[in-house]
Length: 429
RNA sequence: GUGGUCGUAGCUCAAUGGUAGAGCCCCAGAUUGUGGUUCUGGUUGUUGCGGGUUCGAGUCCCGUCGAUCACCCCA
Image (cartoon, rainbow, N blue to C red; front, side, top):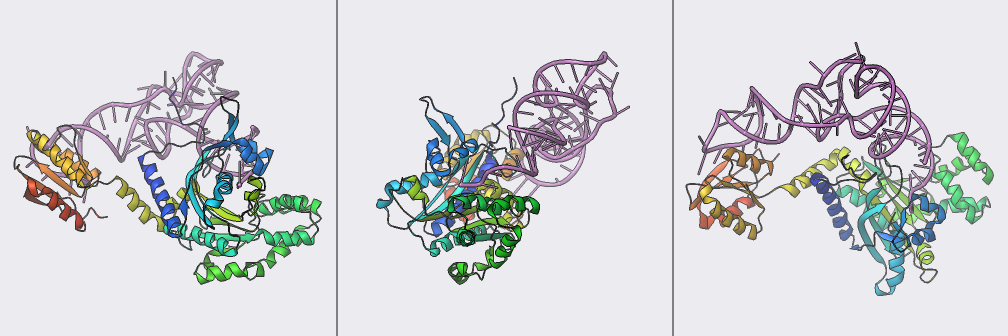
């Protein structure tokens, strides 16, 4: 029988992978909380209609969708924004506005996997609902910048490419393009940097607009354009405007964006967008059948591309490596030099664990050097040796290799004191 | 869903169609009460899977699964 493998596009998370994931989650949570956001979660499975409502029938081919045992059409969530809109519309009266909500969890898309794109990925979503001001847009951009900075990324590593659909709306109204045709036009703009010029020209033809006109218009959209004035003043005051690059080609694929749109882009590795989002003022209304009309804006950041970026960004390495080590390190390795003292050692293990220390030991009789190697491998700060000196035990500081004997009654106190001191020695690399 | 490339030990990779290997990792010993270095020895494979051609297939052919790249998509 062939060995089992993960289902296509899905990942195993071994301990070192979980350590990285925890590091990412912790960072997302810490910064979001710093901004006054509160955490929520939505179901992993929703009615397929929820996504049809938002994006139309063609979306189904990208959905991880199936029928349940009662023949209901359901889908693994491809994103959480529709769920958020549903939840917010249902209970919005219970919360003071604006809502500042964030969420961390898996999403699923039935696509061809490749680097940076899997069928299950984890997103951090941050959204602000119930306030339509540019101040909200600025707050979200600021949050996305600070999340990246918290990971250790700098201005050398990433940039916020930002635009607003207002810009193109004005342009299109001027050219008498009907609102229902505008999404199709924006799709062309979205691909303008990747597509060949003659292809773009052909696709623009039905709109009666030349590539030259589009390019000329894009050149007028720089950071001094009046449409960005308020956002610029806001982010400049925070010292964050230097992270922004106005880029009229950023329109985001989604039809529902209505105002500011932005993406977090890495500058050095030619990766996919690390995060993206914008303002979607109509969505709550659409999702609630018009019952609740609430302006909203938000962004999402995926773990897969972020993980690749972090692994390639020197500035992020220190925090990351430190976090990974901290998640698997123990405080104390109890070494049993004399098997007749094993029960005494176990008693001490429990006492130390009750005191909150991370303690491990060998399950079976083992040579001293093996036990010390285990202590080393687990990055224990101290070793406690139970041997023929009992009822005294030897405490060894594994950082500086100094060893002292103490009475068993003083073990906990002595260890706590040792663990408070800085680890000076080769262990601290 | 479409097309290209790839798939050999836990990992990184070798092997003109002719006995499947190396380094790292791991395990044991040198060292029976002391961890990073060193030395010695050792384990590890249905060569992704299934067919076919051949005296003989890791190697060539077909299919399939997976990875990766491009397309698509990125809600």
